[in-house]
Each structure stands twice: as C-alpha cells, then as structure tokens.
Image: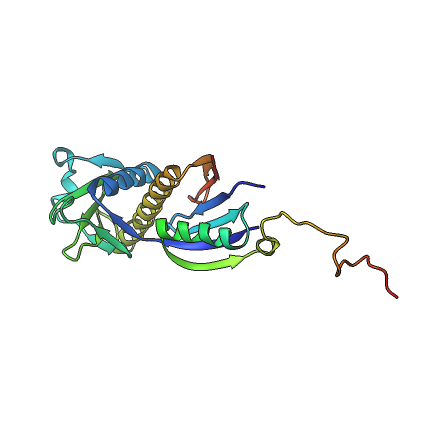
Length: 73
Length: 151
C-alpha cells in the first residue's frame, strides 16, 4: 500500500494548496484535518475520484453469490 | 486515493518565529536587515509611509512587546514589521515613493511574511510527525512548491 504524501504549493500571498495522496477514505480526511490544524483556516476541500477507491486493496471473490460471472438459468 | 484542500494560514507566533519569517521576506524580496545603527536618513525626515495589517495574525505580546519592531531596507524603502496594540502584525513601508507604490510593496511583504511563516511552520510540524521533504522549489511567480512524504 502507498504511503501518504503531500504535494504543496504556497503562493506569494501565503495561500496554500495541498494535494493529499496515497491515502483513501477516512484516512485521507484525517490527513487533511491534520494539515488544517497546523496551518489555519480551510477555504475548500475537494475529493478526487481516487478518494472513492478506498485504500486500494480490492478483492474479488468469484464464488460469491453476487459474482458477475455466475450462470444465469 | 486523494483530496485537494486550500488553506489560509493563521499567523500566531512569538518574536523569534516572526523574525525568522521576516528574514525570509528580506531574502525573497532583496531587502537587507537593518539595525538601529544603520537606519537610512530618509526614514528620519518623515517621508510618506503606508501601514498594512496582516490578516489572521496574532503576535505573542510577551515576546514582542509594543514598540519593538524589525526593519529591512531596499533602495531607500524601509519596511518595518511590528505589533499593534491589538496584537496584530503590521507592515509599514516608508520611503520616497508614491503612496500607491509603498502600499504595493507593503502588501507584497505582508503576503511574503505569511508565506514564509506558513512554510516554516508546516515543514517543522510535518517533520515532527515523521514526514520528509522530498523536493522543493521556488517558482517564477514566487510560489513555493514542495513534495512531502511519510518516512
């Protein structure tokens, strides 16, 4: 699993944009909260499509009742 | 697995933290630090001056008492960073320039102070939490870009 990382831009007025990467779901939000506590006010937060992919550890059970490859009578 | 957040820094600091940020402002804007012994004569003749207040700032009183300040200078323009009675950090630009020019310089310095303060605070706090700065650069528009990762 990827380690959390940040791509940070601080413009010349001090406004900071942080891309939180390598962590999904609740953990991602916790990292964003940590940055807010360090820096100050939060202007906006946008979740990328990657956020919804969870922690990236996806398993598929072909024998599960709802598996898509089951036979249809 | 990501999100993008935009943050506005809050400047709450003691004198050493503010002084470190002012040194960063001086370096990034080409100013030199002034001591009471080398204040230019132009500042004693009461030339035009413009003062701006840095939003979301709170300078700890016991560390930088009222009346104390830090001065930097470039081409006859002096920037004085101080704490006003309300505890806010102020930047006063003084020199033989138009008011609008002095205001522009003071506002640029205010922004740079916030930038430098936020940079130092973020890097320090993230290092305490086990993060490392992988790369960093100053772009042509004056912004600081860096990549930080765990471990």
